Length: 75
Image 1 (cartoon, rainbow, N blue to C red):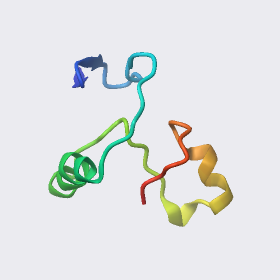
Image 2 (tube, helix red, strand yellow):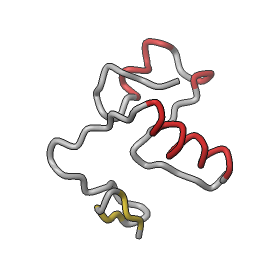
Image 3 (cartoon, rainbow, N blue to C red):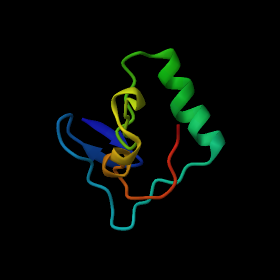
């Protein structure tokens, strides 16, 4: 079982997030809490951040692959 911001999640289940949860990290938070850990640990997984292989997706397919429905994406 993983804990994310005080919310529990079983390994194969979606996270049980509170209503109104919005993923909107600062640049510093992305670097220190996600990218740095991802580079150091190949098994690292951040469930709140979906990953898309841009080489295998057409540009017009990307909005459908966005998990949170926001207009701001990170590449």
